[in-house]
Image (tube, rainbow, N blue to C red):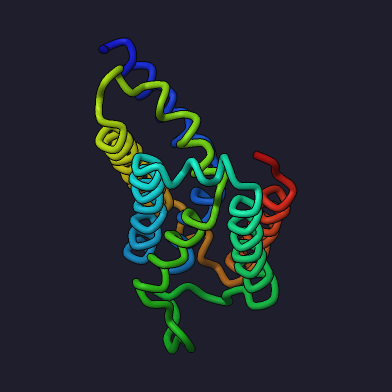
Length: 207
């Protein structure tokens, strides 16, 4: 049991530390909109992992493995969402951060930041497929699948929150430079390209 749990913790830690869409989203939000909105985004991202774990535990994740139509539908919706975010950043990059702007035109609310992180995770079917193939390996024989999947996803969520705390805290030290209008504008466009790249990668992916 202890060896199994250690293996799970090691694997899920590597997964958490691997840069991806969620890392880019949280960092960009921290620098452009401040640490509070970044935390709202991080909470949405990590809650998405927990919801995927619960879904897999209840057997819903297996649908993505069994149904090509269900997988492709969610895949294209997710790719479209990432593409929308990327194009929006390319066409309308921020000129100044929320914290330094004297009169922000449309300050983004915490709910919007939370929803963006949550939807970016929930609309990625690869996470569901990963969970449905990854988590069962660490469930003891005869144990409750729903309970263990939920607990493992909760562990993933807590690790994600800890790692996001490191990212958000670290961004504080170089945020002053990165909040310069020209740097912020270029960073938004670079992040937009990253999001479009993730959209293409998801659209071209297979189970």
